[in-house]
Image (cartoon, rainbow, N blue to C red; front, top):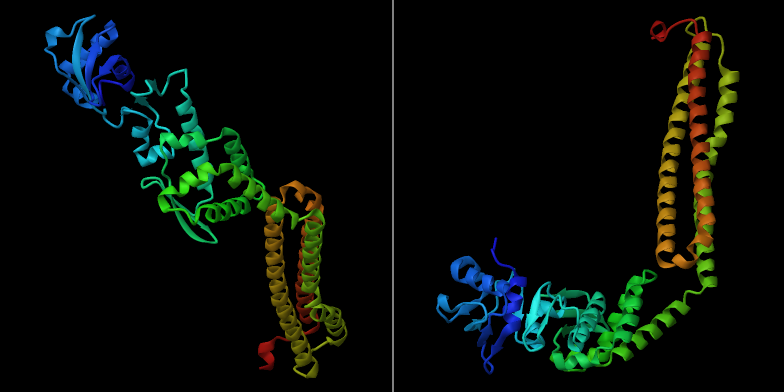
Length: 393
C-alpha cells in the first residue's frame, strides 16, 4: 500500500507554475504540509514512484518558503488522475462514461473535491448523464473502446467521442427529460427500443466519428422524437383495448378450466353406474361356481376402472397446473407492462385462481371417493365370498 495519497499531491499541483507546454515548473513551498510531502518523496522510493513528481533540486534546498524546480507526470493510476486539461482527461475512453473518483486538471486548476465547480465541469457531468441515458438503449456497450452499438432500423456503431469544445451542446434540461423517459419503469423495454431506433435514424448518415457529437448537438430533437414515438405506441394500448384483451384472455382461461372437467365427464358419470353394478351384482358365493367368478370379475373390473379414472384425473391435475402457470405469467406481464391500470384487473385473475383451486378440490374428492369405493368393493367381496381364490384354481 502506498505511503502517499492523491490529496497530499494536490497542493503541489496547485502551487506549481509550469513553463510553456511542458510539465516542468517552479514550485513554491508554501506550508509545512507541502514540505513534509516533498521530504517524504525524497526519502521514500515507493512514494516517489507512486507520485510521478520529480524534484530537480538538492534535498537541502527543500525548505519552507523556498522555490524548487519540479517535473510533474501522472501518478500511479490507483492514486488519481493528473491531466493538463479536460481534453486530457477525456483522452481516456472510460472517462467519457464515468467521472474519475480523484483527479486534478491543471488548465482549469480544478480538483475533484473543489466546492466551486467550473462551467466546463458542469457541462462534462451533464454529458456523462447523456451518455448514460443514451447507452441504456444500446444493444452493446464497450466502455474500454468507448463505443456503443444500436439496433434499430439496421445496426449502427456509435463511437462515444467528444471533446471540451463539444460540451456547449450539453443541455441539462434535455438530459433530465431523456433520463425521465428512459429510466421510468413503465414500458421501459419499449422506451429503450424506441430511443435506439430514433438514435439510429438521426445519425446513421453521419460519419462514424461524428455520430455521438451529432446526437449531442441534436439532443432536443432526439428527446422530442422519442417522446412522440412513445406517445404513438401508448395510444395503441388504450384502457379499452387493455380491458378487451384481458377479458378475452380471462374467457379463454375459463374455457380451458371447464374443459378439464368436460374431458373426463364420461368417466366420472360412469362412477355411479359402476357403484350400482357392484351393489347389485355381487352374490353370496359358498363354492367355486358362477357366483364366485362373477364376484371376482366385478371386483377386478371396478379396480381397473378406478385406476383408469385416476390416470385421467392425474392428467387433468397437470393441465390445471399449466393453466395456473399461464395465469400467473399473464398477470405478471400485465403488472409489468401496464402497471398504471393493472390493479383494476386483479380481481379477474383472482377469480380464475379460485376456480382452478375449486376444480382441483372437486377432482381430488372424486378420486378419493372412487378409491373408497374400491375398498368397499373388496370388503363386500370378502364378506360374500366364503372361499379363497386358491381353492378354485
